Image 1: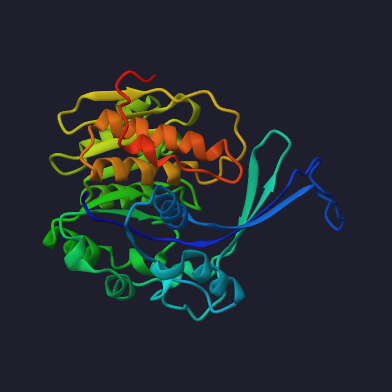
Image 2: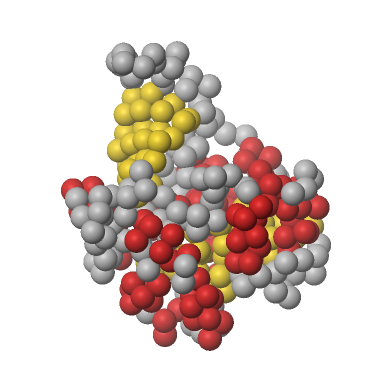
Length: 311
């Protein structure tokens, strides 16, 4: 199996709700549910790999408060060398609405302080040669983004394939943010976007055509994956062929981090030498299991099982 790593944002999520109606300013309401959990794209991917029993590396940082210490404890040995930023931990508070949607309030916190020098010092480059690295949270890790050229050069020099999941820009898909993401894509082998991100970044309403547009920006041999939630996932392979898989019908318990779970499962299957179709099915099935189980569960057997006849 090819070696794996994830680079990016790990933060704290506090989920509360449901809230209905939205409270009037200056008042207080009671809610029925609360959960404090590890969050962030890199954090969710790492937890998925842990749940699947997959060996991996992670490069992230924490804040200099009790939440930072709590995050480090949650990841055990892989977090021993995480640097501590001279600021509080990034906290994201999600307020759940009765229809299942959520509104998030997120602090800048520590994740913007992560630097390339810190990242490369946390990773065992020799062991990662020829592997796959998920690069996520690009619009949040400001310090690292400023040094992306060094990261890209490191990946090229060591035969490392980069899988990019930028997440949603805080300012939206402005022209400037589109140009940034397109530059990053030109140095990455895999693109992992949800359907809205894909169509917004490509400025094209059709997800298949949007995926083809993004693939044209990437190196020869690249693959673009579009995560479509309950509609499954699709991909444009290195030969520009469309591959599409459906999602099973599940009773959804919690969708937070579903795309990150998909990323980790898909990449793990690719690292294991599985076909693109099988890898898509693994991503969809494992994400579907995760969002429909409490506590969250990851089915590692799917990675190696035969799914050729599965829907």
